[in-house]
Amino acid sequence: MRTIVWDIDDVLNDLMRAWFTSVWKPGHPESQLRYQDIADNPPYRSLGIGEAEYLESLDAFRVSDAARRMAPNAAVLKWLRSYGDGYRHVALTARPLASVPAAAEWLFRHFGGHIRCFGVVPSRPGPETPLYDRDKSDFLRWFGKGDFLVDDCEANLARVRAMGIRTVLYPQPWNGATHTVGSTLATLTESLVVN
Image (cartoon, rainbow, N blue to C red; front, top):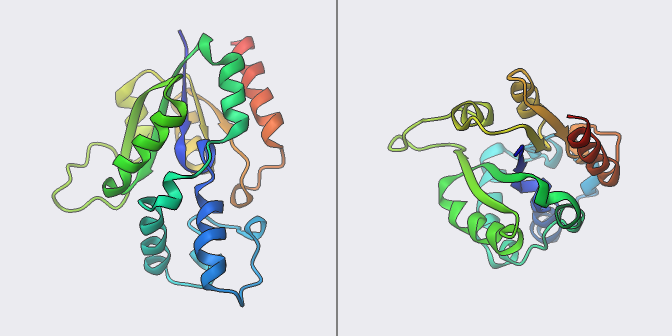
């Protein structure tokens, strides 16, 4: 059975949008920046702040009640209900280890019917953290089970594609995708049927 690997943040959920609308905009009412104008991820340049300030704010949001209440991506849930039972599903995230328990609880509460495996590549690992994987391609090379990766980061997709894994770019403002969520999931469906 083929395996689809799903990025969590900004694919299965709307983390950046939720943080932007509930933390950034209320704290910066003078900012004219709209979510759809974010041209980079991490977006500290678009926001006009330092990387450390941005990461501190996002990391605090990741473990907040507001993040716990984030709605799951309805389009992906619908896709999983229609097509998901024909494939195995893995969630793979790159985030600080301190926020992983919150992400795992959120993931399995919303997607546990289909996603049964959870992988983590620690972002910004501390000196005590063993470095098994530098990025998602390292994890997938070790894991050895991914046939498709759905992610919003073009760099992740390029590294994984070089390994022979099929990729699907999930549209977000910072990745320049020109397709819609609906056409993205339709492409995934067509790719699964063809291969």
